[in-house]
Amino acid sequence: MTRPAPSLTAYAAAIAGIALFSIMDMMMKGLTLAIGTYPTLLWRSLVGIPLAAIPYLATRKSWPGRAAIRLHLLRGVMMVPMALLFFWGLSRVPMAQAVALTFIAPLLALVLAGAILKEPIGPRTVGGSLLAFVGVIVIFVGQAQADLGPEAVRGSIAILGSAVIYAFNIIVMRRQAQAAGPVEIAFFQNLVFGLTFLALSPVLGAPPLPTGHTVELLLAAFLALGSLMLLGWAYARAGAAYLSTTEYSSFLWAMLLGWLRFGEHVSLPTLFGATLIVAGCLIAARTSKVEHPALEATA
Image 1 (tube, one colour):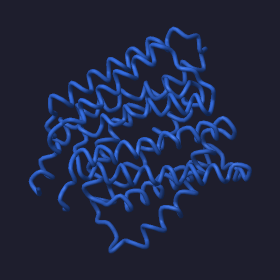
Image 2 (image 1 turned 90 degrees about the vertical axis):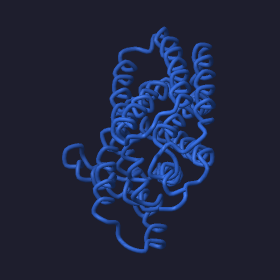
Image 3 (image 1 turned 120 degrees about the vertical axis):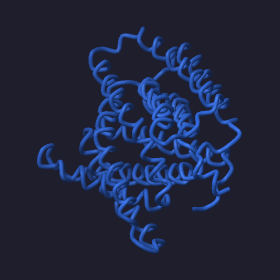
């Protein structure tokens, strides 16, 4: 196992990974509105397999062991219902609201990291997460006052379901990052994700390739690949409890990208909540050590 990078470097890499993922979300929302949720996810994942295979096959020294394969399969399969629920919901609610609802995931991950990974949870991480959670509540109350209709309610419920799955995904991502490198993780996630969606085609229907959206699908696949590699690198070097707070930065991206791409306006309560979220992230980022005993032992 390599010596861990400084925790702030890992935190910055995770923030960058979230930024790329947010831009991908914007593109995926547009594609979902244009061609549907399942076709968008199916073709993006199939396009992503060869893109991820090139760097993996060029750099791999050996095939992963059984433990790593199990983690690749587990996370890849978990991503399927998580992605279906999230992007179905995202097409029905504003990006900022959708992302705000997903913030229950890193908060759940804090508890799961302690229970499953036995990671110590520092007071700054807890305090920063609680402050960010207050920001989420402010945003949700403000959004609830707007009349978005029954479709938005169903979309919000779907996003909450996706967020619960994502909390477990954060924990699996942490273990996966300790067992494999970021290039390997990106390849196997695309492979398992794509093949699982392909296996669902007899039930959900195999849509033709939307030739008018090929460039967008390619770009979305590139963004997803870059995000996975950055997050894999970061989670190999810092604890899940610590890095889970980087998820809050996605709200700022959703607020900006939703406005630029879809004309979604943000209310004053949403802006106030975003301020609390940023403050919480900054507090959590000041944790003085990498929060994982196994990595600290190798320092």
